[in-house]
Length: 251
Ligand code: PEP
Image (cartoon, rainbow, N blue to C red; front, side):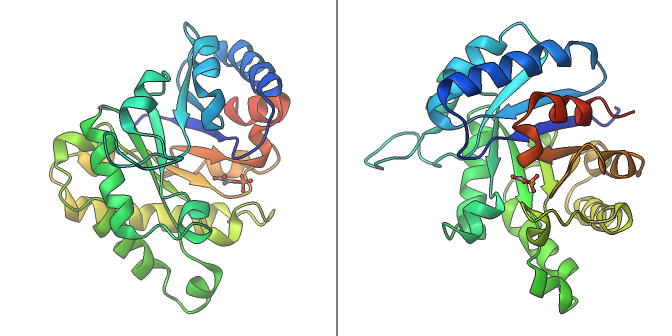
């Protein structure tokens, strides 16, 4: 089985409803010719349903940026897995660095959310990555290993066919400091080697591993030429139709 290529845009807490619809319309129109890769957009939760309705019939899928792990309950302000499905979302970001480092999400919480997503037939994009001080202390592989071990604890191999990992070094997110293709490729190779230890057969070989962190039209080409980077998760540059299309069209 070939590895899927996935190009995703995380809109974070940006756009008005009208801007979200205009952006989605432009991306759907421009993405119609990129048949060999999946395009996924993550709008703000209140706009997810409207964006998913607009994208229906196109080759652009929609995801939620975050999700609670319970099916329902007294959790004011949270979004449940069935709500994610009802909104037409096929994907969910889990453990994005802003969730971990701004909102204090732990590895245990990430693991609960991964379980909940897969049980509800939602494909988790599990984000991992080291802080700058962890990289500077030589702890990158240790941090990635811990995040992978914890995120996928109790997740069977059969579920891994519907799972995506995103390597997003925290020091590269929203900073303009992209990892070099060599640095990113090293981390991706390491992540795949850990997944080979955790899962049997070709599970790790078919797992899409995306890079995220200041991806722009002018740095995508180098990243796309590596062997273990199977697509990208783009923040800032996914908020403009032209720059996102340039990224998803990379050869
Ligand atoms: C992100 O939001 O996941 C991200 C990588 O952001 P940016 O591309 O802006 O660094």
